[in-house]
Length: 140
Image (cartoon, rainbow, N blue to C red; front, side):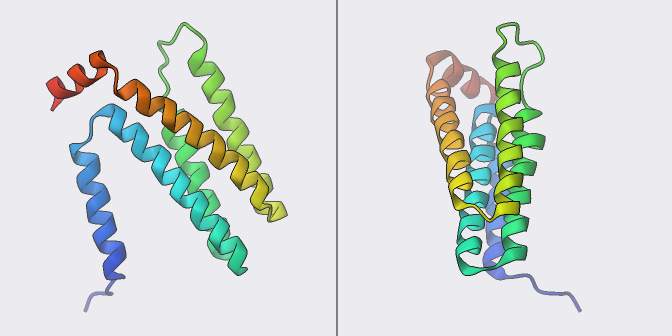
């Protein structure tokens, strides 16, 4: 027959897929930040429990979200230099997380989590701007 996945994981996967399908671009970026932060929380917990493989998987997932989600989503049309600075920051975060994995260092994970929370908060504020809210409603 079929291999049965963990029911809570299957439910979470459906919830995420449904959220992605219904999300506007700003919401999608917030979801990427949330996913990276959740992975770093999982990595910290795994590190505390001595679960080396799980820690490595969680850190790898966070790096993947940062580089292949957040960094890739940066606008190539940006003339202000902000996208270039954010790209460099995302690269820095990925490098730090590689170091955290190698050194088993929770402080580095906390550092990157703090950076991500700060960027997420700024992105959340941008999403509240009237022009963005209006554009999101038109797209829905």
